[in-house]
Length: 424
Image (spheres, rainbow, N blue to C red):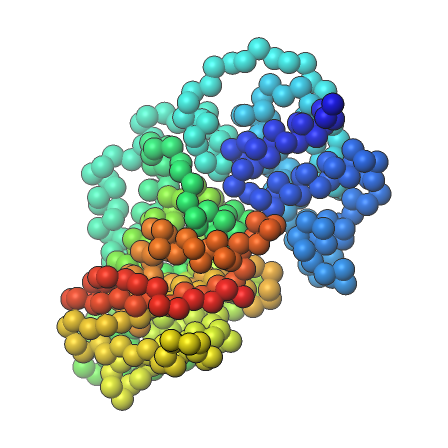
């Protein structure tokens, strides 16, 4: 007969609070199994890092706090589970602060209480709310106004995203998607996540000044002193100071905010001018736009085999493939001046600068290219096979890159295709 503690742990990891979090499930099952087998002495931070998170035996816990971060998440998930799905559990699992050895409590079986159906479907970030009053849901008119304002200012992007997130309680029940492991790793892990739209104003500054500014110029605010003699003082001041983004980035950010894995307060929209180098070192980051509109992509993809480079001589850009395989080209070129033209884009899931998290880059050679990459990512049937190749036995995704081709018709993407990919 199976140990009741193991059966209880299995029910926990099969619940809605854990089913899409493979690492937390693996963490819990490991410490429960070791306890049942009488190996409590093996339940150390270092052993958990090696056995659960695939860290090398030589890794130092003082330099890598992944176990401590996930332990905090695990305690919170357990509390949410026993407040909702597991309210009538007779065996409860607790992980006391200061250690990782689980404690099991026997509880009397309670008479089930009726629970509104909406609570079972609500994402984890909202499970503490049993039923939201109907008056809290945003009115359609307010939602429309929020979207319109968001087209102009970055602050409205934040407001609009939050607004759509608040409306998730009224959406249909969640359905699984091939990208669930990707969003779980980026949005629902122990690291904070910064969602960074493109800087459309910076792109216009480059075009109007006929000068390309590098990341170093962007970081020190050199764009504020770029002369714009062709513009009046008011327009020049707006380009220097206002936080403009693209409609493509806005739509993608709103869609991300509606994902089940999104956690308000943990996942934050941040304009690229307010991002810092350390954010790419100790957090997850989602970057929209290529180097001309989001200079942070230049350092994020500096060692990637697929890279976007400007070709100012022809007013175009190209994607360079460092080591092309059979059937692949070394360069894929787009010409911006043609109203209808072939263009290319990249979806890149790479390690962050410290290797503790990930950076997702969604960029194209032009607006249509970035649109194509965002649509393939957020409607992922086309990239499902690549994501399956990237999946590891432990539920984590290997870094990957996807090269896309599409046709830009009046700056709208049509007929997107995958033409190359890498899984590392």
